[in-house]
Image 1 (cartoon, helix red, strand yellow):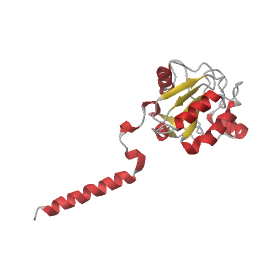
Image 2 (cartoon, one colour; image 1 turned 30 degrees about the horizontal axis):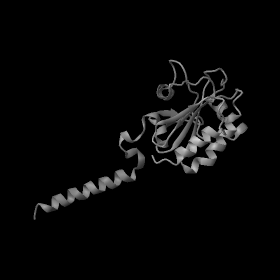
Image 3 (cartoon, rainbow, N blue to C red; image 1 turned 180 degrees about the horizontal axis):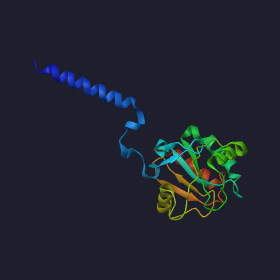
Image 4 (spheres, rainbow, N blue to C red; image 1 turned 180 degrees about the vertical axis):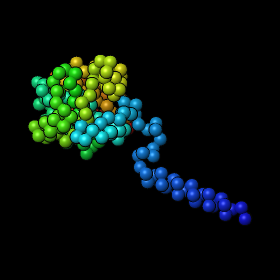
Length: 193
């Protein structure tokens, strides 16, 4: 019986450690819980602070390469409407401005101001990103490899399901209000992660 006290102390210490790690939240989760497609750190457009895309694990995500001076730029309005309509159900639009097609020449601050002031964009936006070619960001290289499709123009879209796997990709002509895209989003939202 005299050896029971050290074991109880050890057990109490382990219990306290388990509680502390549980309280710490998502950062204490095992590294393998973030799907490969979301396992990237990118910089937010507004303040250029690093942001892990793992925070979108378990959500349906639409990744879009955007531009301020493109014929498809009005899609910002529809993307914001999609984001607002479905965000409470576990959906997010993630915008990545790109100058790959020479239609996004401003600074990150200018892009942020344009998106917010012109289209009321509230969905997460990230700093100017290369989306094609050898210099493409690791995220877009991975999206291209998984889908077999590279962005051919601005407002190319990749839909990722709750399980972190690619559902489909959509060309620039497929607008945010497209029946096929909205249907795929709604179907994905009904699927468990």
